[in-house]
Length: 71
Image (tube, rainbow, N blue to C red; front, side, top):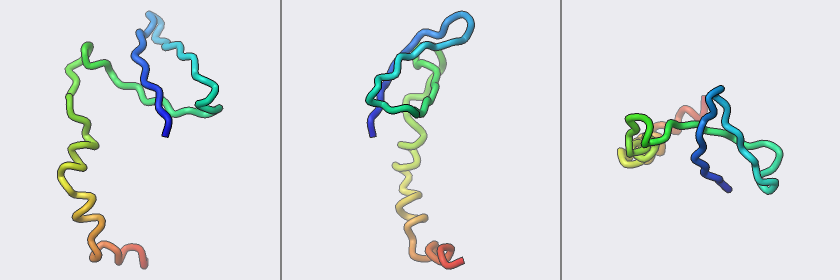
């Protein structure tokens, strides 16, 4: 996956202007987050918390959960 991280200032009218490199293609996905310096921003990403808990590996990969695939 290719990613481009930008930190941009939002204009007074609420717009952010971005020049997308041509190699990114015609469709891109935008995820907009508050900048850590602006908001009370949690340092740890929630996906990392889920990975650290082992829930996906231990529960969703369990053979007992495979019965749902037969429904």
